[in-house]
Amino acid sequence: MCGYGIDYVAIMEAHTGAQSGLVQYLMGVLPDVWCARYLEMTDGVGNILEFEDGGFTFLFDFTSALGEDDVAEDRVVAAFGVTFRQASDRDASRIRGYPMSPPQGIDAHYDRGHFISHVAGGSLDVNLFPQTRAVNRGWSETGKLFRKMERYAADRPGTFCFARPVYRDLSCCPAIVEYGVLMDEGALWVNSFPNV
Image (tube, rainbow, N blue to C red; front, side, top):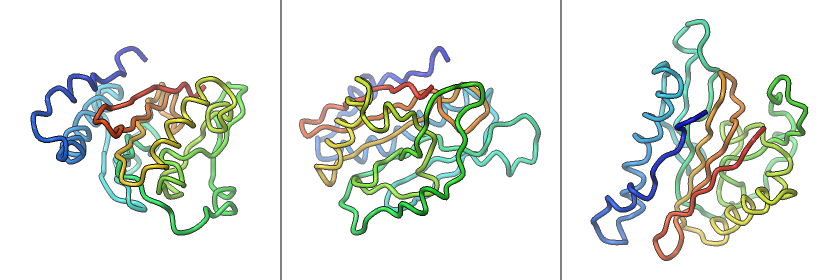
């Protein structure tokens, strides 16, 4: 698990353009950084696709298409985009039907969390993952911080945000979820949240 972090300060300092171009800069630079770090953690084995779902971009490791044994489950590498107000309520019955199992050997309670919250424009399906209840519902100190960051992004449509899962094994359940929000003054607010 060592070395999963990314030097976002250096990435921000490398931006020499106008503040108005910061979102485009981040959307151009971060996907390559995330993919490179992910592939380092998986010994270079991956089949990363990029696609849009519900207004956000997903980097997704579709390793099952490789047809090999002992590769990671298909899973999200990162989700990112600009927040917007959802036009409809989330489909609770569809979320309940999402197949999910918490990591084996862990006696924790998990919800079907969203990489990008529904109120910030996040979709279902690929956007769902097993997330500890304490963080997802804001029951712990780290959960309160996570919810505060989600609210910041959701309350300001047009805000750039991202979620980057960090995996400790080959499962699709992240051990850590890194969440970032570009604040109004141009600072990138990033925190890591344990998910075990």
